[in-house]
Image (cartoon, rainbow, N blue to C red):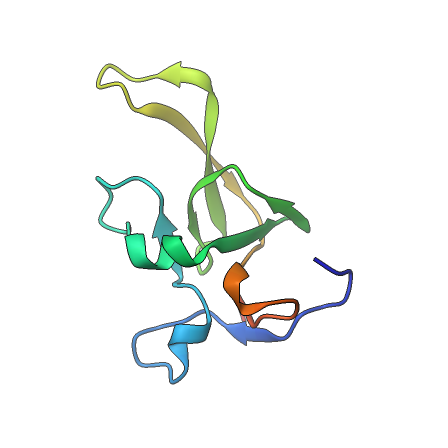
Length: 107
């Protein structure tokens, strides 16, 4: 990714035209979550949290300004990874759109 600032657009909502070009406002990699969407995850979603590109995000919400990351190797009693919620500015984009994709962030 380049240091240039990509095009910025508000977070996608169902009524927003062109919503297919930006990731949803809330997305999770856990198939048990109501916010899981395999098709959108297949495209590859890039996440920037507090001005750092991160690849360890389990779930995010752009409008609420938080991400969930795994808390080490700890597991709960059902075998699911324990996560912690970090707050701050979140930006998301589809990685399959090339060098300068539209970025969804809190507007």
